[in-house]
Image (cartoon, rainbow, N blue to C red; front, side):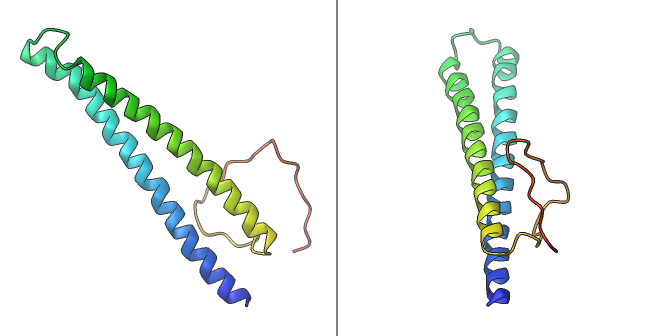
Length: 111
């Protein structure tokens, strides 16, 4: 049963990491777009009002991606807690460097 749980946890972890990477790529691409819009306007010598709506909505999209990314970080923490709850806490599936949360007390475990 433990092997099946580990297999399932690994599958979920792979999907989580893929979702996190996709959000980071989306954030970077939208940021590139946001940087290019005012420069394109300047290069084309258009009035400042031209494209303002596009700049505003693209900037809003960055904020939505940031909020979505924050929710995925929270989801990651919840999945880690669930992994600990079912006895898979000592298994590592992902990143080499982990963020230490100072909000939660450290727990001692027999390994």
